[in-house]
Length: 172
Image (cartoon, rainbow, N blue to C red; front, side, top):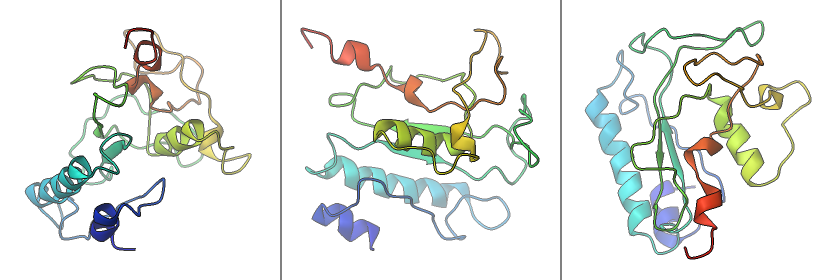
């Protein structure tokens, strides 16, 4: 699979994961952030320019939790391995066609990398990977002023980035 030609040819599968090489992954020990940003921008620009993908593609951009440059907010004790520190996650989509909650929306739910899998499973009505994988965890119930789930262990499915109710309302 060649990502760039698949975007140009409209032949991407329904879900694609892209892992940049170590030279452009933005990791402090082996790369530079501006190289990672350029890598991501190239993909976003191609998807936005594509008549096939601009209407229904969501791009989730995240980074590895390594490097020690992210804050040390509440870390949920999920299992033997625990959970990582909080990391950035950007949601890119065309709000003309997809029901993004708001430009610049910041979610205060408790997600981690598995939340991307939970999003895919919910969006395509798929079952969890196994009966014991983290994608089985419930979505978090949280007090408005707290990042810590009341129903731990819990991981968000990222659907709070979208407002399907108002997007599908009459008059839209």
